[in-house]
Amino acid sequence: MAGRVRDLVLAPRSKRLDAEALAREVGEAILSAQRDAERQAQAIMDEVDAKLAALPKALDAEFVQERIEQVSREIDAAIDVAM
Image (cartoon, rainbow, N blue to C red):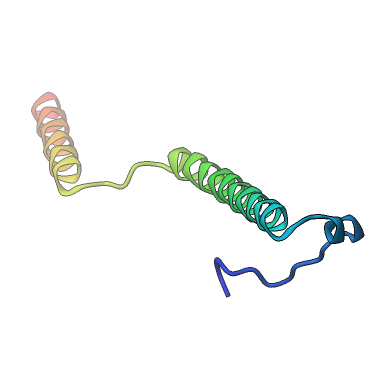
């Protein structure tokens, strides 16, 4: 039932409103609830984004290849020094 009104409770004072005023009040209440839900969803997404940003970067193929080449050069240099 995402995005649907599940419950509507009218205060006793709502009986004093005409249909137009009551519709306006209900509309404002729904809009307020939608905005609150948006704020909550954004807060959750901000938290997820912060946690994702804190994760280490994934190793890509280029990084792995560069690292292998670096280690290979270091091994070659160590062999040259040993000889």
